[in-house]
Length: 417
Image (cartoon, rainbow, N blue to C red; front, side, top):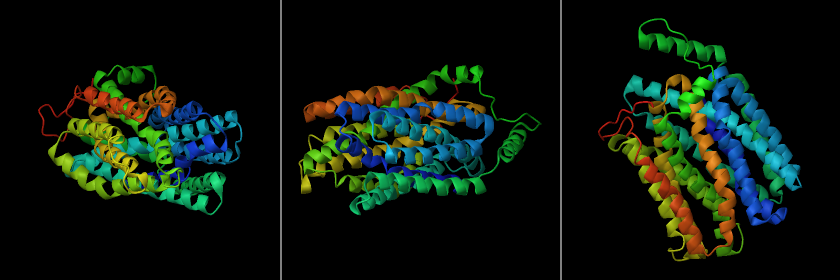
């Protein structure tokens, strides 16, 4: 689990040295229209989140090690390509490669983290959300440091190209570290076989799934799991506005995007500060479903607050209010959603289901990004009200889910299917 947690930190450190500045590079640097910038960002998210199901299925089949290594290699190539891409076609190709790289390594790391969290819960009785919160906090520590690295490179005159190359170098280090430290598939398979035998009291076959149509049917015919995917989609569409609507709001309020890196740093620092205590509180006192609903409501409040908050110091108070509420909602709902997945699917399908959770959400982002990009020219109250309706819809869907283990509500033990 220490390796997985350090991995999440390193992934986000390299990634967020580049991503916050991509929209500005596309719009101001390459002259793309607003709807096209939104489409490119949506394609990036879809090629990542939308194809998580591929990475999840490959992880179930081959184990996490080869999938993570392949993803790191593709991310290095993608950042290197994006650094020198000058046309719309080459930018889109590089962005798709960057996204697909994450579609390989992220489901592998996240599904193993969920499996370790369940193992820890069984061994100690401590809620799995604690382990997943630590995993999320490490990722946000990387997301806090990454934009600061990107801002520093921009201030030093290196520009967007320098940020891309710095991100690529981070993933070179990640690739080298995982090639040396990550367990090989045979070791992972042996551990799962031993655990399965211990649980059943008799010899059984490995839990590593052979992905195929039966597994896909089992996951996508699971009504409760699909409802979780749709509810989570409302969050991911909203979260994507950090890279689309937030830069536009900051530029509108201040005349430039110089403060954008600091707002991203605020978001990440807030997660690092409150993720563990808030998750510890929620895991002990409320059900995962309740945490998911409350988090989505907080995200919706963040959108609604933008046109209602006075401009304040430097004109950044509405944007900062949005970032704080969105981040608090994220802190509540992400560990809750990930913690619900093992309750809703069988263990041998956990990698596939972890990928599918993000794939369905990524498809929603692809559909929604061009539309929300077009909203950039709409009056602010209309734009932010429409955006607030997205996570509210997700919260309404979440009401239909099982409560999930660890909560105080009746029926907290969910049944798959």
